[in-house]
Image (cartoon, rainbow, N blue to C red; front, side, top):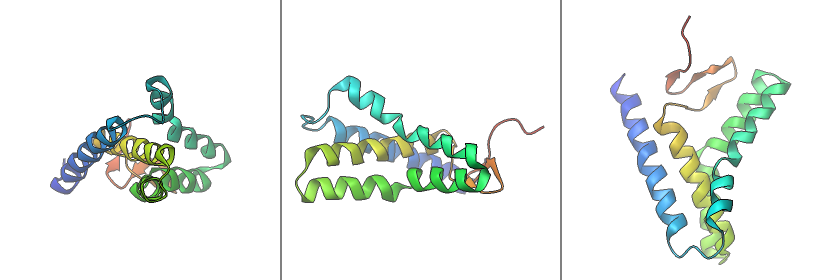
Length: 123
């Protein structure tokens, strides 16, 4: 594994842990079971692949960039809207979780081509 990819996967781990810590800190907005369900909600973006690889990659990437969760978290903290802050932290945690396991942002060429390299079978 190239060093740059290793560092990005470590970064994903840090974002994942940080997001979970933020969710757990003074969590009054979400129940544990709902937080768990919402943690996996960004994966629904896979449904956009039913429209083809280009729209699928666009939607997947729009949902999985760190900026999306960061923006929700910031709005929730500034507003103050604890639910938005919790959702932003969960979104960040999810994106970090994916990156930690090597699921990077997708190329419009193919689902298995990511910014962290190819995923899945290489045959």
